Image (cartoon, rainbow over all chains, first blue to last red; front, side):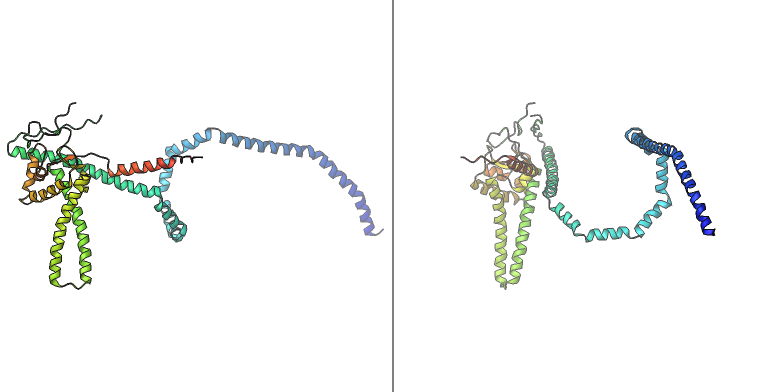
Length: 178
Length: 189
């Protein structure tokens, strides 16, 4: 018998044994795999429900508010803002030219000027400006009126005192309630 | 609270009765009103003068004619200024300056001033100003705070409280908005 024939007969014997082993292992492990899969599913569901409950509860809000109000957090933020790193960050932001480019693009865009034209020409804005101007003129007019009335009386009193005449009996101010 | 008489009780007026419900205006307020009007007149005259000077600069005008034009301009200035006051006094009773200070020129009984008396008053203002403004001094002592021109034209200057320009503007806008909200009248069938 040649070597090939010997090997073929050996494979013929081993193949059914190997198939049997695989089937046995599969049958043995199947329940364990199901358990693991079920456990993983249950874990995921539990985790999702826990996150949902945390998000729905007021606890998260309380934690966030307390964290913001916390003196430690505030002090840390203050220190971070006052640090050289923050200054360098701002410097690098400006040095990068990003803001310059942003402004250049913004000023070059027609939309911005259209929006400004729309706002400047809107009846609400023009009415507000004219009302503001009229209100200011009114205020000045009121001031001038009240001061000039006082000056009337003062000049008259002084003139009458100068020539020794009795002061005029001034009319009463109109009652504000009527 | 009962209000005392608007003018001084017991003051020696010039024979006419004092109208009780008019509040007469004193010297300072009238002076401010006059300054506002004078500023307006001067502004208009400056603009007209600049325009006339530009026209004359373009045209070739003999020097004699220029003198005549200068005299005419001066006369126009005086007449225009008097007309400014006269027209406002006999129409609304208020010049722009008087409107700003909420005062009005009225007759002794509170009525509108007639044109001929407005002219008399205009002349009276010039006469009162000629002797170093001595014609305005009686305002300080008269019971109805009248100056020489008021005595001449039987007028008085009284307070005329009214809505301000801003209030008028707001009221107009409100009326327009309300008119827009009204449904259009139904067409007859």
